[in-house]
Length: 404
Length: 164
Image (cartoon, rainbow over all chains, first blue to last red; front, side, top):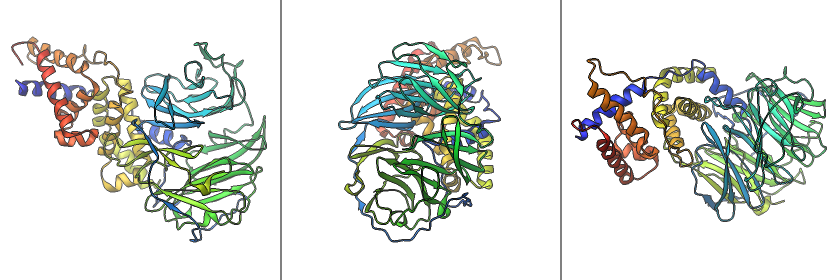
């Protein structure tokens, strides 16, 4: 009897499993999506070498003089969730927001960072690309379109995720992809989209209506930037300017500063492997892959600043992977035999103590921006890559040398 | 990424895309969700492509990501009727009973929990053993064995009498 069932199963599976054909454009679609999801994803190869060409920016060498402390890889807290589809995270106080892809929809969840308990969750119309907590505590999520016909857009949630307002794209004004969102005051935000930079005004929280983008509530803003590439990541600098990372056709990336509708200045990098993060006096940037990668410190006008000893701390066969910041603390992910997180509280460019956390994972920090909240740094990690449930969200104590 | 790696990725998608999309469909029971699921798996594979290509295991990697995503408890949702339920044709000889059995299997599969359906797909579509399926799903062999047995029993109970 069981054999009959299994025979029927095989026939049904073979019939249904061979009925569909993938789109001829699938490989290109995957490439494009990966290259433009900058906030969460960074593809790094130890063998590929991309020549670094920076306009007006110095390149720093890596001297192997590490004043760092290696911590035991002891996670402080691991949230009991599968993080296989974690797309972005953000934290405020003890609350961690995790945006996940729950195809064809997305999901936004809030966790208590101290206990690991899930506090609340809310659906997102499509797969999320970025999550940001605004100064007023509201949580903003930008999301991509899906194959299932879900449109891109942005949603604003109350801190407890119980109220939501939403803006869906109509494809005409916002383009088809929303890569990043930067809250700019109550109900207002700047979006990085396939169509350029767009400012939006949301409906009030709690009004569960869908507002379609139109010229009255969404309009292209800022300088013409389409010839430079697609804006994929935003960061506000201490002088009020907005830094925009533009990715152009896989050959070059550009960081520009905008203030209102004016473009202030810019710097160009070869390749698409660029990450950046704001600091009180400017911007930290990683660019390139492998041993030719570089970490730079730039001013608020994108001129190079001295970096000091800390970034010369590691022999880097795999290079700098990504950089992010929290207050005055700078974090860099580096690739050696495995991915490591090196941090330092930056104030004196000549000498800063730092610390390194060697991650016990094959996959993880190279793809995601960890978030830092209080004395915890949190990131999703994959311990093995060939099984289905290797991912978890793990937090580590921030080393004392890195607290700021 | 080197052009050789990029070409290898294109070849991989061209060569394995249909099979992986079939797996995605059987895991999700929805064509559009399957396309999204496959894209999720391929995007993750592309990020680590040089290593996966060098190790010769991109299929296993994409399969692992898709199974993990499809069986994630937050993604489980009641499966609707299979897209192709109405499109399934009777057997070549016009055997109405075979068609009835097949339709019953499809209905029964649609009603299975995502975990049980994933076990069936891995064991009867991908051809894995229960131990291999357990490794892919990150579950114990005992758990997968139990899910497999319950799924088969449920299918048997739902099939038309006289066949199962």
